[in-house]
Image (tube, rainbow, N blue to C red; front, top):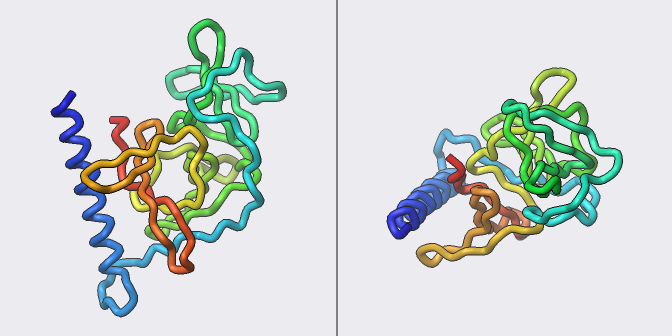
Amino acid sequence: MRLKSAVLCLSIFSLTSTTLTFAQRNSPGHSGQNEKQVPQKKTNAKQGTKPEWGTSVKTAPARTTTIKSKQNMAYHYREGVYYQPSQGGSYKVGPAPVGIRIKTLPKGFTKVLLGGISYFYYYGTFYRNADQSSYEVVIPPIGAVVYDLPSGYEKISLEGFTYYTFEGIYYKTIIDSNGEVAYQVVGDIRG
């Protein structure tokens, strides 16, 4: 367990150092060739009250859509929230499995541009255009910046840095160019 913690700490530190170097290279006045990532402003209405990640519910909410994962597990989906089957017939609120596709993005999504690629973010889930009629859940891209995290995250300190984590994804707090607090993806340890 101690070795795993040390490896995690070293990985997060390396990612943070890389992110800081990236930010320094892209600071005003630097002549580097890298594309500057500009966090997208929140252009959506509040996402409203959503169930906390990790909580269990006895039944999936009414009017959900059933979506099958690549492993053929049935998930219930409603308004950007995923309910995965749990023991005893209950459901756990949690992340969408990578690869699941939906036809319409949830109301209130935020567009995130990173490295010339458009992602769409909502309540802890990142999507990309899969084709002209659907969006696919993707692994959170390292370096992506969002302005809200789903409830249920854990705040941790490693080597003097504060991170926010849930379901194996690590975020750090940053201040954008307008002085607003944002969260940047710095690690994914789901393996």
